Image (tube, rainbow, N blue to C red; front, side):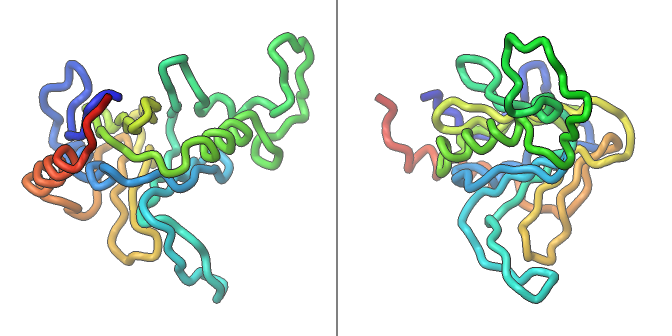
Length: 212
């Protein structure tokens, strides 16, 4: 397993411009937290990390959420040493589409029907529930990479310059402001301080068991 527990820039990115300066500090709060679940609502991908919490919902009942939620609305993919596990493009494919199929269902609607993405995310969640984030890397466009302890990586890469949501990080049920990244920059609360990130990373390294 690659030992990588510190916040880092992606290769070639020496310093972030001011408009994305807080991105790596915000994402660093996910370090060493376990994956709980992953799913989607139309084109929005949601991922929960941390511990399960029971929160009141808007209808007077309750809902189960993670300590942290990450919502992604720009291109992304999950990869491992063998290649792409799944990604945003799988949303447009029906779940029963085979590689040798020469037929296409032109009435297929990914907003109302199950897709290849749903199938592969379900498989990924069942096989990787509880794996922890060991590395956070960011770039100067609002993109990032989260590396899990078993080698899988979540890569998020914005592809437009408009003032629309790329992704947001927040604590469900908590009234604190969301940390939001768009084509014009990052905005939200000052979630953590840089010295706290360094201390947190040192504690993770100290508590990790030696890699065989």
